[in-house]
Every structure is written in structure tokens, then in C-alpha cells.
Length: 92
Length: 294
Image (tube, rainbow over all chains, first blue to last red; front, top):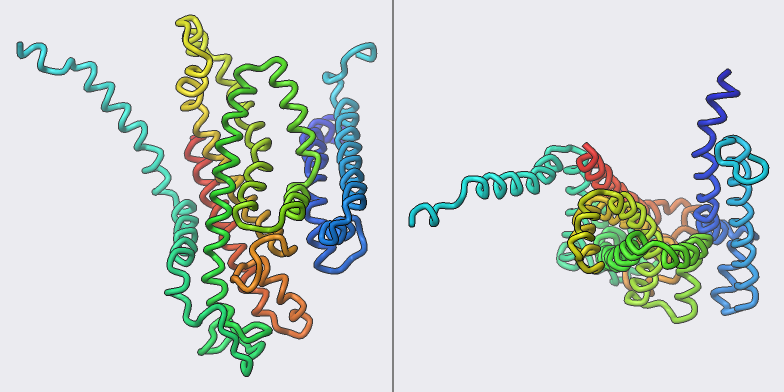
């Protein structure tokens, strides 16, 4: 019963928060990757920015934007799955 | 004659209740230990920011090349850094930069965000839809990344940092203000103001604004905490104030390589300063929020 009814409803706000925190997370990524000299997208953007490598920067930021978009889309889909009241249109 | 000169009893009562209602939240706040604790820490840093050079035991720029990387001792309470500068003095003077940039940036963001939020929430319709989509687009990118892109394009300077962080916080604050305004718009006093034929600008700034001020105040303190974090992150990455001016973020980034060699005091004390300032602001935010919601 707990898994079916409680978990379902208590997950909803959690999912939204996780999705919106993705952006904040990537901001932290830049710091952490620079700090530990870790080869990731954060470090890539940071080095592109300091070297004024604009195409590289654009690509990195576009990638982050897409990741964020997919994360929020996924969250929206999950919350409609968990909460039938949000469904609209033919499927409702 | 005396009847006219004497104030009507009703007016006295109204004025009295109004005054006590506006004074009460302050008294409630001062009774809260969380608020007092936050205020004490904040005031300590404010004093450091204003009188930094006078309080600091050494000059934050003086290099004692014979006393490099010295551990905390009686002469240098927080030790000395790679080039023999007193860490305590640098921490004290470093408060100035943060406490100028962060409140100024947050204030700019709050003023712009409030105006935008009032407009979106009250006018609604197409304005709300267009500005709302633009805000979502800005929110898709991390604050730190947007800020450093702008600073890379123009070059680091405190004034520009204030402008950039202010503009980045504008959409975030506008979104909060908008939802507060939308709640207010459904209340009766606004319908009566509209029926009286008041101008939209008058309704927005004299009818709605005072009623959403508590929400804006809370949002301001929350954003102030975030702005400290953002400014420190940026100066850690080298986009803040330029060395040798003392600054917590850039001091950490200059000295964290020494952590491996055991020179922990060069990184720990600026980091503790940042942490204590953010904790102080969060304590103040929490107590304001609790007082306003009780």
C-alpha cells in the first residue's frame, strides 16, 4: 500500500526538484572539475572561456541546455505517469 | 469649536493599530535567537568590511618572504600564505569586496525583478507568456556559467560583476514576485480599485506592491545567500576581483594546491569566512520567513 499510494504522491515534488536542480548541479560541476582538474564538460567550458574559444563555448552551453531540457521533459513525463490528474487530451 | 479641534476617536484608534502592526514583526524578530545569531555574525563581517584595514593586525599585502607558509601562531593567528602574507588580515579585509558586490547585485536584481514580476502578474496574457518563456530559457543555464560568459566577454570588474549578477537574478526574482502578484490579483480589493478607475501603474505600485513586500523581502535574503555563493565561485575561477586585492574566493584558488603539502590554514580560514557569512544570511532568512508566516 505504501509503495502504491504514498510513494507515488510523495515522489511528485521530488522529481520536479531533481529536474530543476540539474542546472544548479552543472554550475557546481564547473567548480569541481576545475578544482580537481577533471576532464569533463565543466572544465571544457571553463578552459574555452578563458581562451576565448567561442565555438567551443557555444557547443558546451548548447549541450548543457539540451541536457537540462531532456531532464525537465523526463520529469514532466514521469509526473504525468505518476499523477493521472495531470493528463490532458485524448489519453485522459 | 472644540468639537472640531478634537480628533475623532476612530482616527486615533486606526493610527494606533497601524503603528503597532508595523512594529510587531521587528519585535518578534529580535526575540528570535536564530535571527540574533545571524545578525551578530553579519554585523561582525560588516565591521570587518568597513574598518578592515584598521582592524587587520598586519597589512594584507605585506610579503614576509622569510615567513612563508607558517602555521598559525601568536604572531600570525591564521598563519601565513605562500608568499608570506598574513591570512587573518586577508580574511578581514576580504570581507569588503563580497559585502559590496553581493548586496548591490541582489538589490539590483530585486528591483528589476519586482518590476518585471508586477508587470507579468498584473498584466498577464501575452506579456506574461512571452516574458515567461524568456525566463525559462535563462533558467535552463546554470547561473555561474552565464555569469562567467558575460565576464569573459567584457573583462572582470566589480561594477560589471554587480550588473551581471543583478541581471541574472532578475528572472528568478520576477518569477517569485509574479506568483505572489497572481494570488493578490484575485482578491477583492483589486477589483474595487479597478472599479474606482485607478490607473494600472497606480494599482501595481501602491495597491499590490505593499502586499507582496513580505514575499519580496524573503526572496531578497534568499538570493543574497545565493549571490555570495555565485560571487565566490566566480572569484575562485578567476573572474572576480583581481589579485593582489584580498578576496576569499581567489585566496582559496591561489592556495588550495598547498592543501596536499599540509598548509591547511591558507584554505580553511577563507572558506570558514564564506561559510559563516552564508550561514548568517540563511539564519536571518529563516527567521524572517518564520515571523512573516506566523
